[in-house]
Amino acid sequence: MPLIIDGWNLIRNDASDIDTNDALESARILIAYLGRYQSTHNDPIIVVFDSSREFLDIDYSNTPKLKVVPSKDADAYIKRYLDKTPERQRKNIRVVSSDNSVYYYARSSYATPLKSEEFWEKLRGDA
Image 1 (cartoon, rainbow, N blue to C red):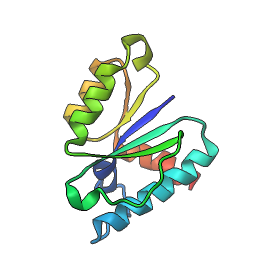
Image 2 (cartoon, rainbow, N blue to C red):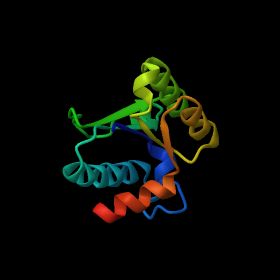
Image 3 (cartoon, rainbow, N blue to C red):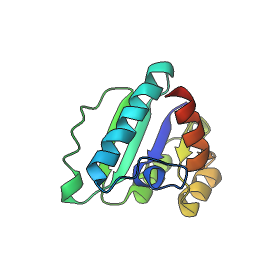
Image 4 (spheres, rainbow, N blue to C red):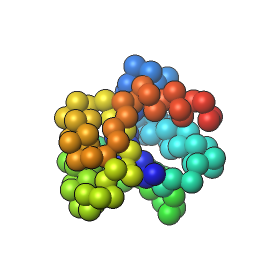
């Protein structure tokens, strides 16, 4: 079941302990966590970061199973991703965000929304 994650939302969630003073370092730590998670799970992951030019330099080579996407608006990217997915396939997508607009959009789109704190528990359990 594919995962699409609002990166900054996950990093800045109260359950997170990786929100450092250096945003790029926090992003790198999250990507490392996701890489470890991916090694024990078969589902592809897309992590989307709200980015202006300074965050387009995240040093990561995308793989078929873990893709890092800088976007000017992560929420809009996630919503478009859901809209472009055929309705019958959306139930197989998990959306990780505690942003209510994204969470409820995923739910109304028949995807499976997960609050960031719920996903952190799963992520830490595998790390």
